[in-house]
Length: 458
Image 1 (tube, rainbow, N blue to C red):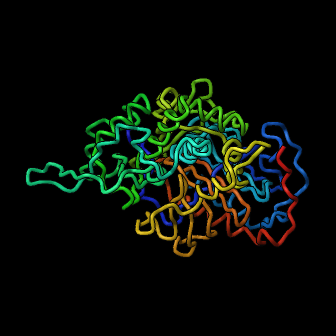
Image 2: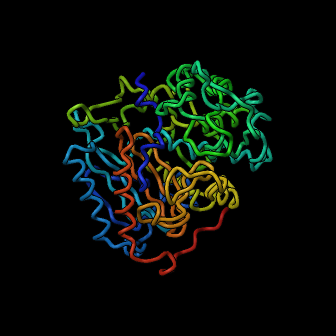
Image 3: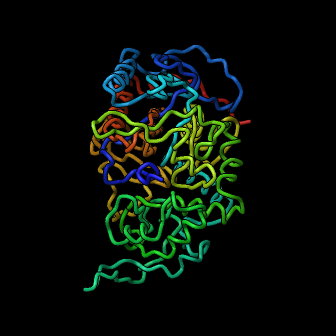
């Protein structure tokens, strides 16, 4: 299995303007739609909905500015930089813009459709966070609890403290226990092993701590428990296998396999019927192919129906990567977070839980991984758009994936913006460009225009 295709994004290559926006709902390949269509409604999770009248202007966008997105997508596709791109922007619970351009399969000239399935890679992480937070709300644990209380294998973990004269790792006791909150926010001391070159990263690789080499969350996490931590808990933010530890906690605390718990608790209630792990054979034809740049810069297929590394996740679900979904399905998930935990007459999380999830959870002395941005419980949180180096709002949150997929939720603008393509490794400059194009089209503040209240919960 090609490790590069299975590994998540490295923090070291993340661009300062990191908001890639993903999705499309009912799009036709090569056509953009400017509308006031409703985003997946807060009253009918899986039923057909007749869109109420509305326009992009009624939602506070300038139509001519939104159309710049199509020109931008076409330019990347015409230049051979991307095969196909799908985008969706929703505001005030309605779709203002959606478009699918280019191809799902360049070789077969198969047009990109709105119901295409996408390998989400690290966009799995926010879903994993929500799954564990539903158990938090049931009183199963506290964020300040030591991890070893639920996963005893971490009781005797040590911390890397340098090398001796023979090149062997020096280990010391942790100054404090790893907490569950540390695991949520990547401050536990874990690493990924895919792209780091520290002695701990190398130890992960030698131990086979790798999605491609693991058949279960238990196997992966048990191996992690035998590794030293790369730093003292709480002292650094390092992107890692943390969300796979969270997924294992879901299994231990719920008594259910991780994928089954997600299906019962998140996917079915939200009507996310096309959200699956891996690449199930029955759905393989709906996937957009994954491309990477070849030696000459031209796009080459890095995963197809016959040789798709991502298919490993079909039978081996993980919490840090592995989900596949459609634009419409992920919009439901994002809209739920924007709605502070509710969607389709179903409450997945409480309002205060979403507020905590999307707040800066990093300890004050812990350096963040990017200027103007901090980290919550599974999502990036923008704290200063100017330092972040792009348009945006304080408090906007979201995340992305290794195949250049991502989502952003902007509570201040009452907006969800989504974009999918399948290009590895993640193109963060592309991410930044799209975020700029979305926000430059906003001409009215959310408070400038009366908005019809969302229906009350049933």
